[in-house]
Length: 69
Image 1 (cartoon, one colour):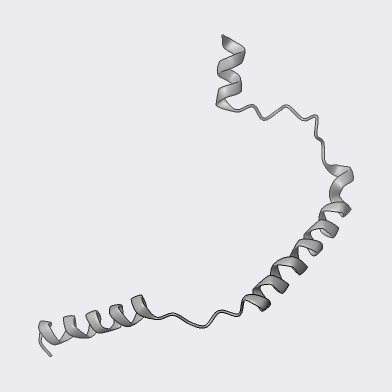
Image 2 (tube, rainbow, N blue to C red):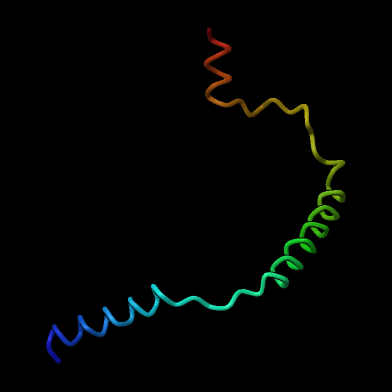
């Protein structure tokens, strides 16, 4: 098989991928996003006692620059 035929096949596949648009079920997407939010909130509540909001051990570059000035 010559290079021209191989290139034509690749071009055909690329064109099919570019213009392929599957049907999107927005209702299912909304259900998935809203239900997962609740799961994460419950999981975060379990670990809230271990969170330390006063931990300043991580300082950004901007904060270091401000401290030096």
